[in-house]
Picture 1 (cartoon, rainbow, N blue to C red):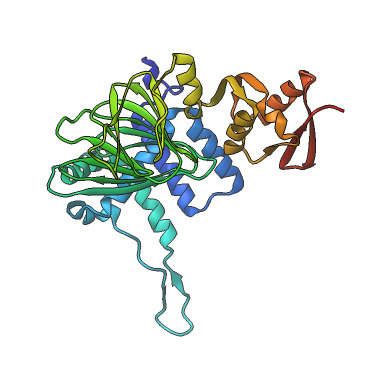
Picture 2 (picture 1 turned 90 degrees about the vertical axis):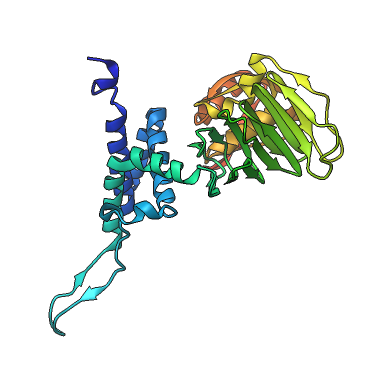
Length: 345
């Protein structure tokens, strides 16, 4: 028996069916226990989250796909209404939430064929494709774009996709995203944000909106950064292993970065946070992006202390314990959701 066919390593069809079942339950309304169990299942295997995203994206595509709207398995539920033959007859209530839940089960079996048909219909160059993807402040999402490019969204990020026959445009107003771009020499892949256009054909790069402008890191291939207000100006060209902070005023010199620095910059994509000579202020900010318990610096000068190591992003308690063991920090807990770091007396 192959690992992918065993109960411990379910194949894609089994995962798709499980994802459809979870979404059907969610449509009915999760209990707190079910919600926690769903989150554990989703995080247990990258394929689980991908299956959930795929089903949700398929459902969204169907709203714009007239050839498939008529499938009786995918019909939208009727509005809630009461039917009675006489004034004293029992009322029969049609509940739309249960009907909608049934749609996920149907989609579980149709997802692959529907996605293929939808993408063929929407990416043949005759019609544009528009979609929006977003994450909450402490969330993470991995999505497959219509051209098979992959976008990973850090917390507090929103992308607006607008594909045409000439270019693949992604508008990004805030947040951070990593793009692994599918090759298409006829249509450049463009990320438009903060008055800049980051242009690629087939490559991988990270874009982070910062207060000073835009932080661009390239991990594969080459990208070009242009100012929209000055399209004829000399662009900034970045190759794999290079990054630059660009702003309306000026651009910092292109910097070479090694694998360790790249890993630290992209640590938000992984279950663990990796820091190499990072300031405590940066580390605190990273933990606060992902956790209900918020860390604070009681003394601002503590923020310049350097921290290194690998930590689980959801394990604030272990991080605090390690800091206290160093003898340089003590913690106070004014509320259950706040931990204040100070110097020992």
